Length: 480
Image (cartoon, rainbow, N blue to C red):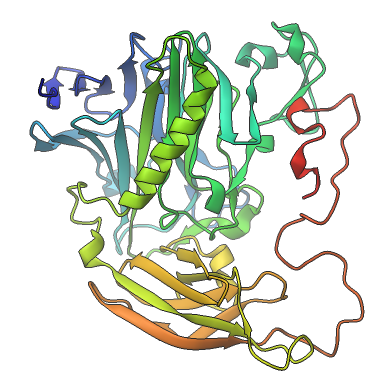
C-alpha cells in the first residue's frame, strides 16, 4: 500500500503538516509550534502552557555597549507566512520577521526567517533559521539563541543524553518554592518535599546536564505509556559557536529539550556577539531534526527507544549536508569544498623523528589568532579528528576564508596554519604535511595529568551527601 504523502492545511491562525505518521501544528503567522500529534497522543507538547510557550525559537539580545549577559528575551514571533515547497514528498514553510527603523531599541535589528520541513515517510520534522543584519542597521549585542521544546509533564519522565547520562527526572512542580530550597544560584535547588519521594534530598540543576558541542548530537525524553520518544538531533556543529569543546545545555526538568546554537554559558561576556553599526552579517542555523519514535512490540522496553534514537542520529549525520532544504542560503554538498592533509608534531624531547598527531582536533574557522576559534562566534566552523597517522579530512566546508587550527592530545598549546585557506565549491585542497612544534623551554621534569583538555586523570569527589544528584554518585565520569 503506498504511503501517504505530506499534506498541508492552512487555517486562519494555524497551519498543519501531516504525513500520516505525525501531525505538526504551527501558529500562523507567528511560527510557534503549538501541537505535535503522534502515536495516539493528541499533543506531545505542554498542553497546560499557553500556545506561545510550547515549541519556539528564541534569543536574548541587548543594545550596543550593554554590560553583562542578562539581556532582553525575545520569543521570536514572525509576522508573515509563506509556503516554499508543497508536494507529496515535502512541505517547507517559511515564517519571517522583517526589521525596520521604527523598531529600533524595541526589537533586535535582525531579519529572521524560521523554516519548517516535513518529508514523506519521515518520523519527525526539521527546522532551521536564517538571521541577517544589514550594514546600515544599528549596532547591538546578541547573547543567546536556540530552539526550545516544552513537553507534557504527565507523559515524559525519563531523560537521556548519553549512555551513562540518563535517568527518571523530577517534575517541574518539585522545584516550586514550597517543595524545594534554592541553593547558590536559582537554577540549583534541593528537593525537600517532591511529589515522588524517590527524589527527596536530591539536587536538581539544569547545568548538570550540559554537554560539549562535539558530543551533543542527540538527547531527549521517553514516555512510558504509550512508549514514545521525543529527540532533538543536531547532525552538524558547523553553525554552533566557539568550537567543539564549548559546553551547552541539553535537556532538563520541565520536561524541556533545547537545541542551543549559541550561548555565553561557562564563558561570560567574551562570547557575546557584538555587531557594529556598519557590519553586515548573515548566518544559517540548522537544520536540526526532531525525531519521534515508538515501540512496535507492545511488550518491549521503552528505554530501548534511546538506542533507536542513536541509530537515527547516525543516519542524519551521514546525510549531512541535507539535499532537501529549499533556501538558497543553505549550500548543498556540491556547493562546498574539502580540505585534507597530515599533521605531525616536532618535539625533540619526546622523539627525534616527527610524531603523527594521533587523534588531533583539526578545524577550519574564520581567520584569527592562535586559539581564536574558542571565542569565534559569528562564522562557521568545521572540525574533524586526525587518524593514528595524523591524516585528516575536513569535508563539506562553506566557501570563504579560513585559518586551519589544531591541537594535539598529549601536547600543550595550539597550532595555526598562518596562510588563509579559501575552499571553493566542488574542489579539494590537499595541505600536505603540516608540522606543529609545542612550546618548550626544556625537557619535561614532571607532569600532573595529560594535556588533553579533559579532567580524565583526576578524581572528582562526590559532593556532600546533603547535595547529591544520584545520577553522578559512583559515576564512571568521576574520573574526569
